[in-house]
Image (tube, rainbow, N blue to C red):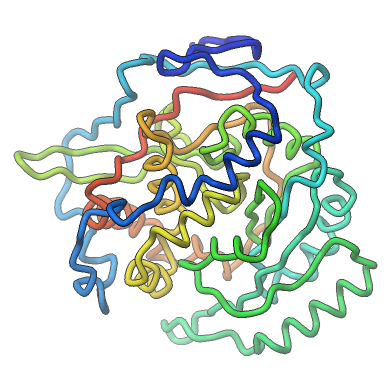
Length: 365
């Protein structure tokens, strides 16, 4: 059973956390990338070894008799739920504090715009919605090939659709970004927080409000919902340690949160742009996998002594529709490669901690 503590205070790693002045927090978030990153932030690694590599190299070989969980820091033996009182918290300074960044492909665009865009445009916490367009791939005779719709044609059709629905907050971003560059949208964002969404997902304005209240307490964490929590297991066989990816129901531990639908400080996206080497980005672009785990790895590194990446908000729900065959998880090799992602990151970033289970959840009443 998780312990529950009120909003007024909570002991975190020996310190008392309280709500701070938003102006000060905004300044802190803006400065975060420059204060946390430096020339010695990454242990040297031979990145030329990644050229042309596939995740197959990092897949576990053989079975594992016992997979052990990654332990929390000694400060907390169990997870605590912090209760926030919605009506007792001033939210005026949270208005227009979020940019919604949607990775948008042609097959789902019309449905997403019709179903989800109007509610997001009406949400007072949302300043802007940016659409990062991409042309997906489809399977033909066992091979993954480009979609037959050009990126320019898709953007033109998308602009027309936005005009038809009378959009006032939405714009289509220039340029093309692969999956490894998904978080590069930060260079077009001027709000302190970004809500990252796949083009088959959304949250209600009420849940965005909850996420912002949680982000006030945990500005260096990924904020998401129970459906997006995932676990990490460790298998030690002699001197060899192998990591394994767990799904939502594998355990009660929140090691990572999928970034297909999550709120985060925009400064974390900027840190990703600065800290992740190009060869790692190129590998993710080729494999179309691992970007969400890498972002959690980075967040755990930035979080300091806690070495935690995410905070799950209870009583919030993810809304969406079936992504169909364009969904990356539909690909037959997507899930098996998730283990490879974890072991790749542990090798490439040896100085970065494996994300530990989150010590906290948040519930807003």
